[in-house]
Image 1: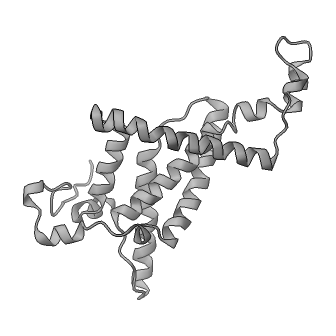
Image 2: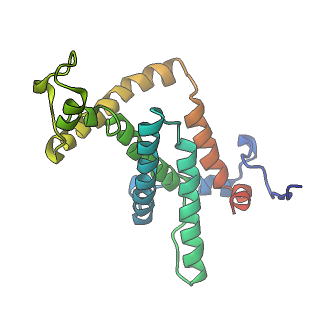
Length: 208
């Protein structure tokens, strides 16, 4: 039998019942306050972990699932555990906001997305000389002039191009698909609902 968990308030309060105190709590901080040292540290650790998972799935299965919700959940867990531990030691801790949680989730998704889109488990490895030799020089389409061994310099430049290509294409796509057609994206919507629910009293009780 499962253990029942009592909650003190709805996970997502109706908009008409939001009090003045809640409005103060939901004030969006400046962007400088949203990017914190603890957030960057957690993002780096989780980004590394998710990159390893992505490479494993890319080399074995060839596809990766959406890990947005997992990134938001683990980001909340790590930072909340961090702040709770330091609070028990008597340190004054800056509140963990949903905006900071979103920054962590975004950084982690960017890390594992680049690991997959960058081709580390597919075409980057397929262009080196060893793969050319394994396939055989007589194989149709396998040409020596297409060999490009991995190098730190050109790979960094290539990843920058891949990253900014997605950034520049996102702006017009957002205008058409989100603003004009008002399409809902299940993964992004679920992640937003999850992060918002965590930063309520009931959500914190359930997560804890």
